[in-house]
Amino acid sequence: MKRWDLHVHTTASDGMMTPEDVVYLAREAGLSGIALTDHDTVEGVERAKAEGEKRGIDVIAGVEVSTLANGQDIHVLGYFMDVHDSRLLSRLKGQREVRQKRNGLVVERLRQLGVDIRLEEVLAKKREDGTNVGRPHIAEVLIEKGVVNSMDEAFDRFLGKDGKAYVTTPRLTPKDAIGLIREAGGVPVLAHPGLYGDDWLVCRLAESGLAGIEVRHPDHDQEMEQRYRDIAAKHQLIGTAGSDFHGERHGSMYHAPLGTCTVEGSVVEQLQNRRKPT
Image 1: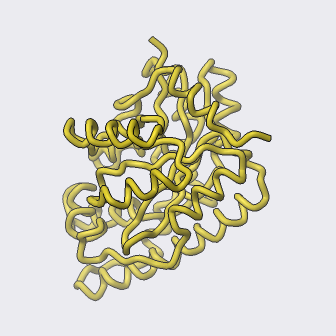
Image 2: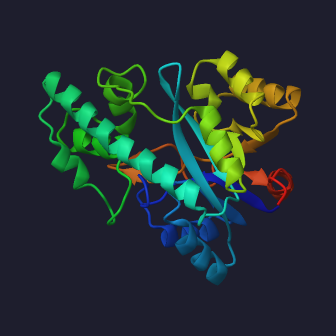
């Protein structure tokens, strides 16, 4: 049976593998295709597509837009956008600039907590020029310094929404991101709703132009999966799935191996059918 993993990160943002290597891994995993969904950038899409053509892997142009609602990060996935759309590229550039400001604030908060860390050490973790640096890079430094033992511990203690060094900065709202993806010819899907602990917000966003909800995710248990499947059905949205693959740092996989959560080709077709008419 043909399967697609619709949530994949590369070195274009905070993943550990290049776009080309991720495509190779997808083939080795027996996948038919992947969606490249790096944080606030589409820089790796064309490279992955070119590699996909060589290896017979379908690569969907995607992105994961970081937004802010009710004081916490809310991520909106976009699929099938025009990656050359000037407005999309401009807004994503602004998002990356905000992310850099946030990195500095997180590092400063960690220093206030007694952690010996410098922003230069975080930036040095970039795998490629132009990489969009984020919290996993900070977590990597914390592991190397022995402050924490794993990615999960780094996010639980410091970097996640309940962590001591968690900070927020002004960003797009989820509704803004939905509109941005739509205007670029794409299809917006709410990422990992179970991580937000706010199903009222999930239902409200379901009525704000979403095409789908990521029902299956490595951080969703069976009860969550069923709950979001029911919410998707209630609002006539597509239930999607993805591994949120970033790769392995210091023996710790974040979030899960490629192909852990997948969809059939029929779901990909449903997403394509939800594209804004041109």
